[in-house]
Image 1 (cartoon, protein in one colour):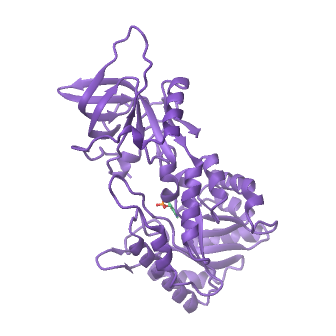
Image 2 (cartoon, protein in one colour):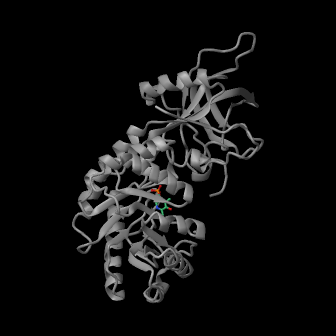
Image 3 (cartoon, helix red, strand yellow):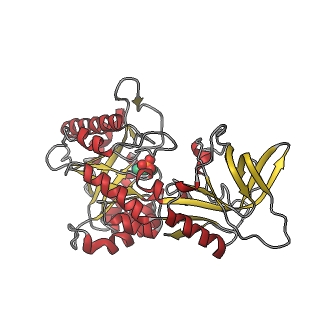
Length: 422
Ligand SMILES: *Cc1c(COP(=O)(O)O)cnc(C)c1O
């Protein structure tokens, strides 16, 4: 993702203060005083847990939910999610360690937890090193989603050396996913997965590698999808494709991993309808012995987080107002990389040092920028605010996913963003 200016929010008003739950408002006000000048995230782990419970509850028995840790890796969020998901999707040694800590903490509450069972983690990533693969195999990961023939050979060699067998799903980049009418996916050149035409050959070679147990397939082709019908059609296509391919290749199919990609509604968009999605996929069960896996990241974590930053300075430049934040894309890069209008609310902070002038804008069109010495450090453009002052907090709801994790904290070397839990 590149850094560019987010689109203009012209004619859009900032969210009213009531957008923030009362307890979030109270805590952020407290943090504004205790940690001034604040640039940080506030997370509500219960909100993430509720999303997971609702999604899991809407799905048939044969479907499982593995949370993609990259979206939000805060230990309290992972601990809350661990009670309500089947496992975690990880990409690095550090994510694996975080997932294991959360799973260990939740162990008594997990009905299926017994010693000797695999660690319920799945792993993806286009360039897994020997170090990562070794840790995954040592942890007895439920499945490693292999992305190439070379990676299959690496996994086989490591597992053989450790005297074990590794469960592996082949990540596939499909040639063509025909779903409802106009929307089509697949066929794009990509670093991820094995191109579909190469799959038969790769599976034939994998069958000769004795330390591999091929459990199924992984396809992660959706992104930010808000439509339950197309997502259900996508999952059904994955089930049918995996079933046919496994039959042809003589694979004992146990896993059909359909990746992440359920979207989060902003502004007046309609939220993803999990009940409808669950009902729609129910008529396409996988073959006996196989599970269908969803790996949501954004959907579970987005609305459990608020990014809040103090207005360090406020100025009018040739008729246009700018609010300069402690923080910016070094802590919260999402709006610039996602190309969305990520709206704000202004939380008034009443204390202000005696003897300093306090710049104030009223009924103004405002651009919100960060503290970095580059014009790309722009989070929101041309939003209408009733009032904003230096010292107030600018708060971005829906910042629980790809916020702290996705930012670029080292550029210019300002202090890191804080993370707090409600
Ligand atoms: C990023 C990622 C996810 C999560 O995607 P979301 O769009 O956040 O749901 C799931 N699986 C894989 C392999 C990923 O890379």
